[in-house]
Amino acid sequence: MSDPLALFVIFLKAAALGMGGYGSLPVLREDLLLTGLATDEQLVQALAVGRFSTGPNGTYIVSLGYFAGGIGGAVAALVASCLPPLVMVPLVAFARGRLLSPGFAGFSRGVLLAISGLLLAFGVAILAPQGPGGLAWWHIALAIGALAVTIQGRIHPALLIGLGAAAGLVLGR
Amino acid sequence: MANAPSGPVRLGDLARAWIAVGTQSIGGASSTVYLMRLRLVERTGWLTRREFMESYSLSQLSPGIHLVALAGLIGHRLAGIRGVGVSVAGMMVPAAIITVALSAALSGAAGHPLTGAAFAGIGPVTAGMTAGLAVISARGTVRRGARGALDVAVIALAFLAFVGTAISPAVVIIAFGLAGIVALRHDRPETGRGPESE
Image 1 (spheres, helix red, strand yellow):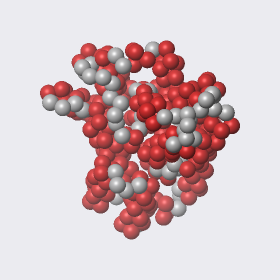
Image 2 (cartoon, rainbow over the protein chains, first blue to last red; image 1 turned 180 degrees about the vertical axis):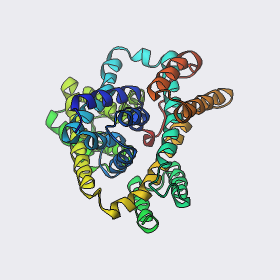
Image 3 (cartoon, rainbow over the protein chains, first blue to last red; image 1 turned 30 degrees about the vertical axis):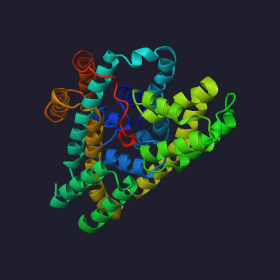
Image 4 (cartoon, chains in turn yellow, purple; image 1 turned 90 degrees about the vertical axis):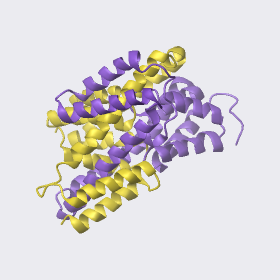
């Protein structure tokens, strides 16, 4: 079981560097995988749990904290992921003009674009290792289908996860 | 829509509204934003639509989970600094408890062959959904014309840095953020993205 303080630092860093709930994923993956605190399999499980749970997209972070460090890890992940966004409260109160400056706009755009590229790469990275049998045609078909449906936005994410599970039960045994 | 509050909103009422948001919004940002608007604008009239959208837009500039920033901004507007704590805790703590319960249930079933088979399908779907979120995020950020080509180049470089080098994603994010101050500063901050990109 991992030290909650060490997990807190990892989750705090990821939340501070990411923009949006999923923006933390690339940094989280690197820090948790390199330190052996979590696996790609657990990342996928946490993302799936997050889609079935309530609240914002970022609740997968709490699930990941639980997988890495039990209840203490979940608490560390929850607190750490809530702190960086709250910097906006004093910023809006005291430096609202700066938030709307061209320089901050450029910074924000650079971060968002980088995160888009990293998230795309993350999707490819978690697709690659699909069990001992390797990557099958239906893995790729499912990924492409999920990509298209997500962009279209007409199917509830939890239903999409459920369909993936059903496909796995039929084709993956 | 009800009338705007004449004074600060009572913390108990605020907590009830946020707990409802945190426990009833399944599936991510879209449903969460919908419920926030329903509870805070339409039903109670604590915020006008314009105030809600202004807070929403500002929250899009925050690090981390944007909806936590939105809860904090709205809580501060409605009940001061204590409102920040009540709003964020009201939304996140019940959601976290539900998440931990689901995670524990999954951990208990992790060794079962059927769970393994199900995740053989969930894995690729999650990969595709993550890539889809990247596309949605990029679609709301990439500009038109020649500047758009520069934006796409940044995305491609970040992608290549992740798959083809050992450079830390943290370094990639900071580097492109700083580069953006110089090279990508022509427009106002992007605040018009859809909630699903959060």
